[in-house]
Image 1 (cartoon, rainbow, N blue to C red):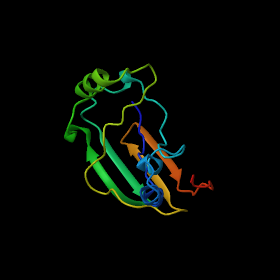
Image 2: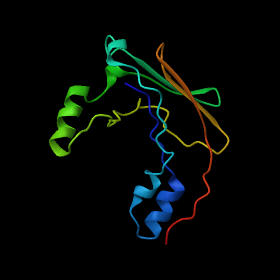
Image 3: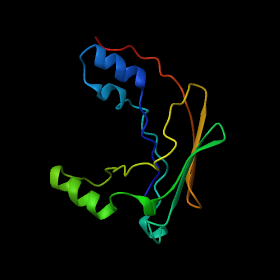
Length: 133
């Protein structure tokens, strides 16, 4: 298990859309899915009894429980593997607590965690890269 942030760039999505390009550019950049160190399955007694949280500049934006997940992990693995081949090392993102999704700005600090297991910190930065024509 691990904690990952599924980031997006509304600017890139809008620019892609306006240029008639796939919106994926706004989701699939190199730095848009920072991920924590992996916690072994053996270290987690019950994956549906975990508290997830996220703060931006110290302000709590998200807090939720894995018991509230819409789809359980075995279903996700089964469904996804019926469509594509899953390989060792692949990562499946299971979703986010319902409240608190929102924008961040360059210079802000994101702290996120799974209570008593993971605590990570990421800085929001703008990467200088030209937009393809």
